[in-house]
Image 1 (tube, rainbow, N blue to C red):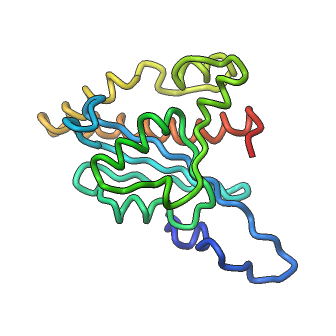
Image 2: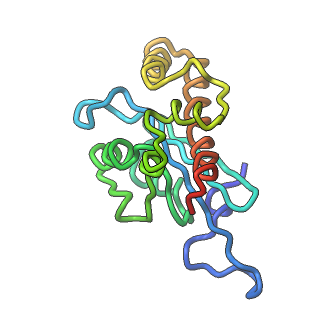
Length: 185
């Protein structure tokens, strides 16, 4: 697996050839949590999909791995981070739990508002369905993600964790598909 530091060069680093333009590194972030309260609930998974040209890389942090420095490492080199409802959920949750203000670190676009401008309202899965974006894990939602986490924690159920990680990975990859369908720069 490619490390993020080699996948996306740090911002401000010029390409090897003066004639070669630097490809934009798009980052897509999604979190899983133990609930909706930033004050009482915990982050369980932080996932980031990075796309550069035709290449993609997905990184995920789980449980104790989730720290401010490790989240910043996942986002290293990206030019802009995209979320769905991230302005109201993901970024404030990360700030409350980790003390990390991602909006101060890099540009952020919340795709939910672009969807609203096109009268695409509802959660990410509803919008995906309306736009014909496919999902493998159709039975998993946010509530099930919480249940999968606790099944992993309480019963050492490795399959529950794999399913949770697959769900998160599908979310971050589908954010890229959504951004392209919406033609958001």
